[in-house]
Length: 467
Image 1: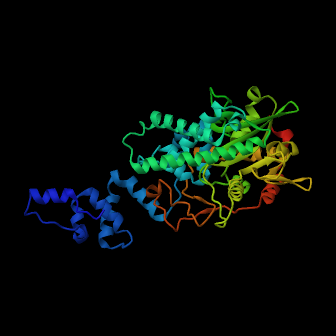
Image 2 (image 1 turned 180 degrees about the horizontal axis):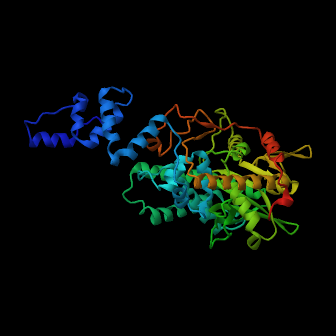
Image 3 (image 1 turned 90 degrees about the horizontal axis):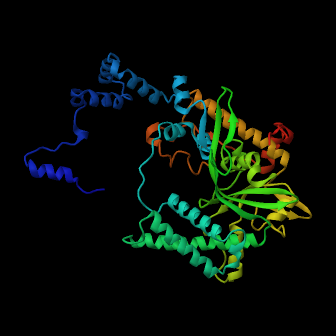
């Protein structure tokens, strides 16, 4: 980055007598000789408000072709909320009848302006070709899908650790050949990271095997499509303006337990980021994707699964958990600690059949609930509360559509943890121009019980939910 510009070096070779000037030393008046640089100078001088700024401002005020640019400049300076002023334009951009993915709902509630940039303007950042976290997640999904499809139900539990690792490497080699042009001519570091990922995946599969050995639930679908011609029909929500919002998506994994003629269904999502399910965040529009999938299956899954009972949602850690133990810890102690640190996060139906069905001894080693003193405890929700939560989620999705149709796209990002500022990793920070002083929509983290109390007070019991 500190190297001299090759362009400057070439010019000096071609024109030895040329004089080099630093832009920092050029007088402001020199920029007035061109219209575009003059407008940039107007913006630069805004904070000074001196005579040159006033003169330039008056000049551009009298130019019809710069009127909209000045208005945009004033909105940026005054930090006015972003909005599409023409409601017909807004409705036309997003559509009276909308078809969106489930992940978009959470993106909107994280920041409406970011949503507008990504899905309204369809502005995508350039990405470097590397094995980044997003690519790792794609490989992880690919391997787990193909492995569990090859060994359906609980057949994966019949393989030894060595056999599972060999299968993982074979699937990864096939992925590299199909998606990445093979491993030829790849850098040594790339090869190292790729092989390391195979070892991490082996640990993930080993934990999965332990859990399946102790569970009555079996994986039955992978990358389940919720779509027009998908495995499950689109999830539909009627809007106040007469339109309809349809939601599609792809579910990582669907597990089912058949009991008493009913299909108890749980939705499993693989997470390499360590993301946790927090119910109070769902009440603010976040953490909704998995629940939308579960509600879609509950509402539209009868043809595929029969009489569906929503058993819950789970985030399955897809990384190598640490074991913070002393140097003299045994292998058994290390494995036990790793298993504890890789417990799935989520929310389960408050039912003895469900909890014991997921973990026969009810110890809560793999799932966020357990049996203690003949009673269930943990991250649980009753079927009536689940119905009320569905009503709330549907309402929030409808409000999102209404806001977009009204052109309301403020840069008002949600923040759940001030240690990780909301805008630091945003792809559109250079577009919105906000900084550390930007107001945040602070999300207060409530206990699971307090979040349930809010849901219980909202009405919308099971008999009011259209199944």
